[in-house]
Image (cartoon, rainbow, N blue to C red; front, side, top):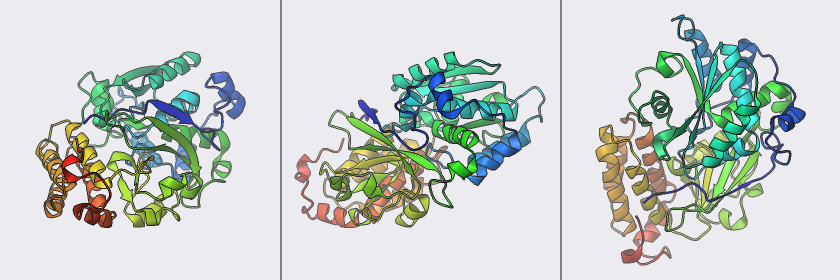
Amino acid sequence: MTILPPARLEVRRGPLLLSGVDDGPTLAAHRARFGELPRTELALLVDLAESAAVRGRGGAGFPLGRKLRTVASHRGRVPSKRPVVVVNAAEGEPASAKDEALLAVAPHLVLDGAELAARALGARRVHVVTSEDRPLSGRSVAAAVAERGGNLAWSTHEAEGRFVAGQARAVLELMAGRPGLPVTAWVPEAMEGHRGRPTLLSNAESFAHLAALAHLGAARYGARGTADEPGTMLLTLTQPPDDRGRIDLATVVEVAHGDLATDVLVPAALRAPLLVGGFHGAWLHPRDLRGLAWSQAHLRPLGASLGAGAVVSLADGSCPVARTAQWTSYLADETAGRCGPCRNGLPALAEEVRGLAQRADTRRRIGQLTGLVTGRGACAHPDGTSRLVRSLLTTLGDHVEAHLDGACGCRASSRVRVA
């Protein structure tokens, strides 16, 4: 099964990153709202990122301030290899459209963040990577780059439209002219990335938050959110893909950390299983949704995380077991095929989850396989796939039992579509 990015995109006005939705994406409109780009030294930029706990928003959640420090500490070790800044907007997660939305309505906030980092680190070039199956992102970046002056050089790249294309090492492989697929890395890209240079590679939303911090200051930025998780985040709200693998509509909203799910989700979504973090995320049970808050601190005890901010609701009434089987098969097909867990483990796992969808009790074997592939891949793709499947068995265990008993309300086992 192939899963395609959303066919339609709705972007709602937000309090910070999406505050200029109605202004238009031009540089003039951006400067009118946020002002000229401030001159920010490296130490201040790192302090801003760390004080606001800015993390990668592509799924891994690595602290941006720590990346800045690491790149800075390795620059100059080889005088001819200046640092490089990379904006990762490849967005391989098909249930996410936040980077696409951000680049469509506020591209200069993203580019401001990248330019601030480049100036502070002494980088002369910024690379922006988008995806071929999200042409709006590529067009938005090209138009925005054309408006910007200065001495900074900009390069754009287009990744293949596949799930693993947004992984950090896959992005670096693409930039090097090789197939954009993950490879084993022995050191972080912040130490040795593009062409052996210290490389600051982070998600488009992360750079937008860095720019917002520099424009507004830590106090104004931190007026929203919680003490431990200041500021806001972007969520993509969708329902499952149709039988052709196309997600119809994605709604991108901006929420403050700590805001309640009841302020964002419609009543039908609050009564159904919810996948948080996209197809590498985890299921939440309907009983937990009424009190759900959008923060890592609230999600962690539920076995979930915000990840890339992709939220998929089963408000359409579909079966979480059948859906997990579909999506596990998709993820098994999306591997780079370069290591054992992806070449052998994920297809085997997908087969067992398909069996579960057909009402064979394969839970014991599924538990064995998720344990075998976790932590052993060249990238985190096996880990994320296992997380999705494990959460089905643990968080939605009552739904699984009902499915196995034929009492879950989904179609007869011989007719459940799982691939």
